[in-house]
Image 1 (tube, helix red, strand yellow):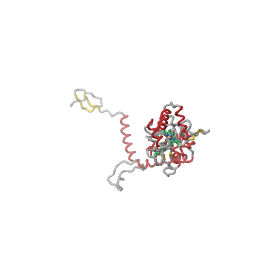
Image 2: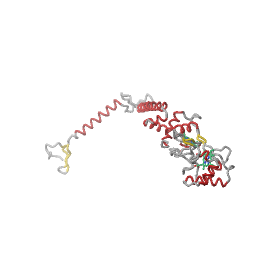
Image 3: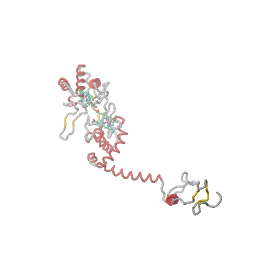
Image 4: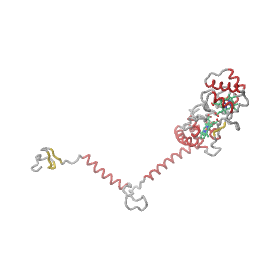
Length: 301
Ligand code: HEC
Ligand code: HEC
């Protein structure tokens, strides 16, 4: 180690090992130095502008820190963001309040907003019965298909959600013979499989089932020129979608015997959709949002 520098003219520290292993004394590359000074400048700048350093002196609990000249705080930023959001919402909300459901649906941006907002309402007020996505629950109708009891138009949906529904079907246990009940239940099952017989249809019509379920047994009594359907909320018997669990022969027999929503009839099917405006649970704007939501769930039919 001692002795003259064996590499004169080289910028080394004079520390040598193993003859030629030595420590050089070069400055770090300039990009590194720039970064080094810049980060110090950044910390100083940050210290001046932003809250940064905790102080031992706490005039107010939790307030003992350097504040920075900009007066920025996280809570202030959050509140400003919230205010922006509320202003944006207020703008949409007033449009939703003024426009009809049809007008909302004609405006894609407003529809998006309405759907997002209605999704929360649906979760709070409807999902317990109809399932979180409207896919239905045992005993409660599916809202995501085009199979409607009362109709999926804006007008029908508004009526349903505002005032509720309570479909009624007579109990036939004292009206029909056991053989007739069996035959009709079989007819309903046959219908759902697309193989109903003429005798089945004749019995269906002669026992007055058509008065509610319609001449085609699809739950539709008539179709108005505008496409609106006339129904009393009777189920479509021609498809394989069962309103009441578990579906099939025994289930159909049960419904025929005990009916739907028949006061005082033990075993009657329960099918009550509560009204939401009547009871003051939702205001008309919330209902309008839900109408748009359910309308879109049902594929716009
Ligand atoms: C307590 C359970 C319950 C709740 C809560 C409920 N519904 Fe219903 N809903 C029903 C039942 C039962 C029916 C079928 C009524 C019938 O058969 O007469 C129904 C029917 C409907 C229909 C008619 C479906 C068709 O095929 O015509 C719509 C639309 C509907 N509900 C939407 C909603 C919306 C939107 C909400 C939330 C605001 C909601 N429901 C909350 C039980 C419920
Ligand atoms: C007064 C009107 C009315 C009459 C008459 C009527 N129904 Fe119904 N029916 C309904 C209603 C309303 C529903 C239940 C719809 C709902 O709430 O989903 C229903 C439901 C049913 C169901 C259950 C369907 C399912 O998917 O689970 C069957 C089966 C049925 N009816 C068969 C018949 C038969 C057969 C007759 C004739 C003997 C008949 N109904 C007469 C109104 C009626």
